[in-house]
Image (spheres, rainbow, N blue to C red):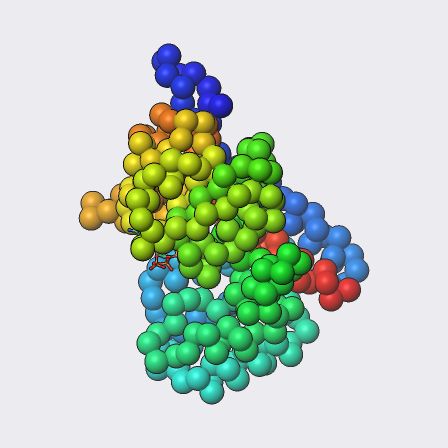
Length: 290
Ligand code: NDP
């Protein structure tokens, strides 16, 4: 349970920046070891068109790679790139021995077949974990490269000491990127898992059952304080920009904090973990070539 502040029980804040930094330090040590065996882990980021949000992510990824000693390269293709050109680049990167991880920045411009592009990435280099082969491995209880955001969430829960086995976990959101893999990871930890989505009946009541509540919806502050069970761990994956420019999550933070046992802030929660786990997956992919 949380600490007492001004006589009220308040949730412990799970600090994604600090845990993410610890992961990045681990990665940097592993990179040093790999370099001693002659392997420099390499990540290629493919971006099509100039979505400004992606530009910021790509810049942050490059900086994080540099700090960890990972070789990184960016491939920026014009907005009007066609499928053969994009698939040709992915094929070249699949064959390039200096590259251990390939990340195709989503969303792709309209007209490009996202699923076909993700399927073209060599599953051994699929550091986003979006290839159907890696999704299937996670589903069958034999995970290999797992999507970075849910992997980061699991790491946060473990680092915070949140009990998992036998607990009720509710995941709001069923995307292939966050919700579904999150639910599978929690199932792998022996949680009893419920997945909710836009058609779920009485969402607040389902959320109130959760010992672990993960919100991955993309709706500013949708999860209210009275949706949170006393003492629950509340993980906010959402990143939403309000009209005044402020960044908020999918959870009404102050309300939820008064009920929860643990909670992640936005920003400074899940976000920094995603990049850290991307580096970790890249090193994992490089290690598996030894
Ligand atoms: P998607 O839009 O792909 O999925 C959203 C999910 O939320 C869908 O399953 C949708 O249901 C569900 N949903 C939408 N409205 C409601 C509602 N009113 N009630 C219940 N469920 C609802 O988003 P992502 O999974 O890609 O991302 C979710 C959020 O996480 C976004 O804010 C995104 O920015 C953020 N994000 C953050 C990352 C990080 O690093 N911190 C990384 C990735 C994402 P249905 O399937 O029925 O449509």
